[in-house]
Image (tube, rainbow, N blue to C red; front, side, top):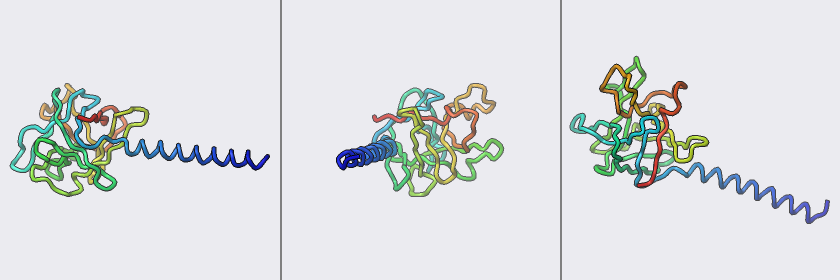
Length: 180
């Protein structure tokens, strides 16, 4: 081998590494931020703030008309807030958790707060551009759309809830996040 072919191989090697690193960073930073609409892939309905639950919280529902949300990077995680009232999306603690089903209610917090219950890990699904899973960092549970018409509890229909990841339906945990 000649010195120029060695140099050529070395340059090619570094270019491959650089391109690979750049693609990996692009995938990691591909989460849309700013104004977004969030659609449940399974339910084909949008995440919306709904009726007040009490003076501090608003129920989260799924509806056919989109609502605008703001996604902001917060360290290595994200915060999701309604644009209408700057209310943070969060998974409710004890009172909103059903230990039998493993489901947890999701609300917006009207006053806003900086707790970990409002931090989300957003990851793009492999092979599904624009489709994401949203994991609540505090509880290690995934946001999902509850839209099964066979639900015995009609209060759970067309709601967003969280629970531990189960293998029976990955689609239920997918959300399409698109800029407004």
